Length: 273
Image 1 (cartoon, one colour):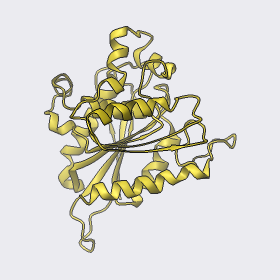
Image 2 (cartoon, rainbow, N blue to C red; image 1 turned 120 degrees about the vertical axis):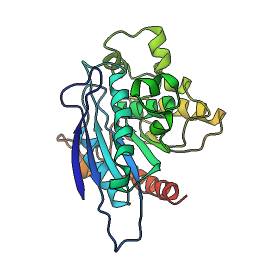
Image 3 (cartoon, one colour; image 1 turned 180 degrees about the vertical axis):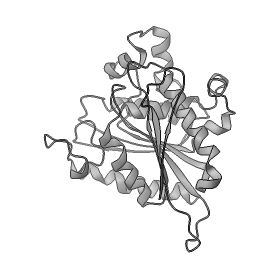
């Protein structure tokens, strides 16, 4: 496996903003010419990037044949659109190294948990726009994700918003115009890629309505979504197991861990299309 760290220097980037790549070895004894890629955006309320939603998930996706890149994006005091520009820079890096890493650039999946889900969904919603391509200095096709995989994502800035995420993302400058732009259920278009989404009914930090509003908007455009809602579980479960349990013993909800197997099935189908 090839592991590398690429520091990112977009406008507003913090000094530790970086892309950490995990590239599976190419081998003459394995009949795989190119592999799909997973770009992971950990959660953390745009205050930090969670270790629990970074490398543990990377190891899981590697085990099913995906190359992985973990984006440690800039958080507060950095403000929008810095993290999004770091996501676009990550897509650019993946494309630039695609030949040497044996990446199938038509099958790059963007994954995010909680606020990282908001960032992943921002890329999925805005990849086709002229303004983002111009800011990123690339053509739109470089920014296009094949799909998005969202764990209990922050989506809406409306009634069911996780206010803390928007406060940190906008630096307290929460104008009506910016809140409208970043309420992502309102940004779904025919260009939005398919999605796998899961959430828990009892999530009190990021209400399940965030996912439901996004699904409703995607349904209007007949964009495929696989959605799983679990009846019980706190926010931020990651793998839902001891592998990502918090130091106080919380973060374990074994029945919710089936999302890993369900997502594996979905990802393999996407890979093999």
